[in-house]
Structure formats: C-alpha cells, structure tokens
Length: 398
Image (tube, rainbow, N blue to C red; front, side, top):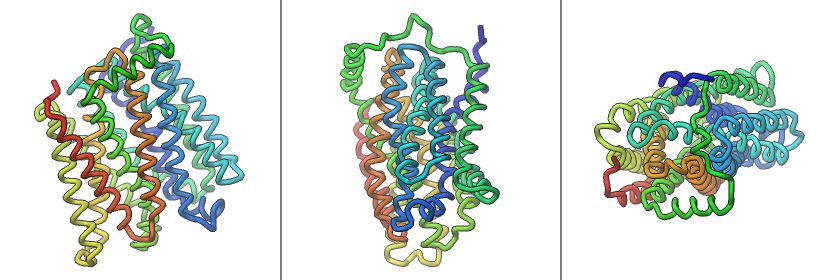
C-alpha cells in the first residue's frame, strides 16, 4: 500500500498534472504560423482554433471525468484520461488536414480534463477552504514554470524537426507524469466515500450546486477570467509578429511574461490565509480593469506609441499574474461547501467555465486585425463583469 505523499511532493505532482494543460496549449503558440501555412493558408486566423479546440475538449471532458472519479476513484480516471490524451496526440501527429487536427485536439483536450478536474478534486479530498486555496496557489506557482518554457520548447522542436513533432513531446511528458502518479500517489477517495454513477444522484448534485449562490458567482468569474487568458493566448503570437515585428523573439518574450507572472501565485499563497479570498479577488480585478483601460486608451490614442511594446508586455504579465491571484481562490470559494460531491462539483464548474470561456474568447481572437485593440477591448469587458460579480459576494468565507 502506498504511503501518503509529503505536502511538497503532492504539490509537485499536481503541478505536473496541471502542466499537461499548459504544455499542450503554450508549446503550440510558435507553431501557429506554420500550421496556418500548411493547413489553412487562405485563412490564417483559423489556426488559432488549434488552441481553443483543445480548451473546448477539455471543458467537455471535465463533465465526464469528475463524476467518474466520484464513482471509481481518482487514480483510475486519471490513468484513463492519460490514455485518451496519448492516443489523440498520436492522431494530431499524423493529421492530414486542419479539420482532422481540430477534432484530434478536442479529443486531446478531453484527455487533459482528467488532470484539471480530477486533480482539483484530489486536492479537495485532502484540503478545504483557505488551506485548499493555499495549496492550489503553490501548485499554480510551480505550474506557471511550464508556460514559461513551453513556447521555447515548441520553437526548439520546430528548429530540429517540424510542428508535428511537438505532439511527440506531449506524449513523452504525459507518460512520465502518469508513471509518477501510478508509482507514488495513493488513492485519495476511499471506497466508502464514493458516489454511485447514477443519473438521479448526478441530477441531485447538480441541483445542490445550483443552490449555492457563491459557487455560481465563482463559476461565472472563472469563466470571465479564463476568457481573458484564452483570448490572449489566441492573439498574442500574431500581435508580436504583425504589430511589434518581433516574431523571432516571441518565445523568449513569452518566457519572460510567464516568469514574471509567477509572482501572482506566490503573492496569493502568502496573503490569502490572512487577507481572505474575496479581498484578493476584488483587488486583482480592480487592478486588471485599471491596467487594461490605461493601455487600451493609450494605444488607441497614440499617447503610448513610444512605449507601446513595454506597455503591452506589462499588460500581458498582468493577465497571467491574474490567473495566479484568482483561479485558486475561485476554485476554493466554489468548492467550500461541496466537499461531499467534490468530483462532480469540480467537473461541472470546470466544464461550464471552460466551455463558456472558449465561446467568449473565440470571437475576440477571430477579430484580430493586426493590432492589440480587439484583445484589449474584450479583456476590459470581461474584467469589468468579473469585478461586478465578485462584489456580490458579501460573506467572508472561513
């Protein structure tokens, strides 16, 4: 029988499970121009769907993986999702067309849903409230290192091989992380705590979730926050290439953005237990609204023209830092009173927020016109709405 992991190893393992998602998205960013040239030369913006189709599959997959993990345990579902991820990555490698690639990416996203939804439920099995928020912040802090190196990794693979070979790297990473899971992590959900996979029970759990006002607000805020991130990921490579003429240096600049953004998770892990989740969330959204408004108005009017690149770089760091300051808190806020249905609640919350955020992000990404203005405008709207919603949470969670 496996012994419980130390907190450090548990955090590290979950960070690598979560990193499957970041690696699968961010390593593809430098490849988007090559994919567009090879598979959609007449409509280059369609290559952005390589990112959002993965996220869409991830959102759909979480709706399945969470309830399965409540019924059969966390580890078997994580292993099954890893198998789907590996098979779909192989299909991506061999794809003959953009349509096939997008279908395979949806399936790959469904496989990556396990680490995201079931991993969150696994953390909730062992922690709750502000302690859970703190653990998730530590996970996010390590997890953020992967987006920092993923574009460089993708670019490096393309220099020695081609964009298809990036999917082979995904397969190797997934195999190593899941071997670690199998050999070291004990099951966190004992048989006595499992819930049979019956439609009536799932419907009852869904109704219970719908009655939790704070959980619904937190889910909506997750949707809007994720929409900011996915819209940015869809457009940022094109902005660097077409607006700033810095395509060659994009992976390095993205690394800098991600490394600086680690501060968000670090700061949250230090202050959330003392200050509280709501206050951190309100302050973060206020800062994001203010920063986006300044950069948008400055670029649109030309006032920031001499400092345009520095301003956009600072803004991009803010977007990624916002994830570290909000997502762990929003997850903990939503799951505060839902520990007895953690797997299903986590999957439903993640599914709703992910699918809805993709639907919000796609129009912003497809509106890309060679400038940052459509992206900044979309993020400003999303941030204002998130701020308004979180202000509705009056009770301080304990």
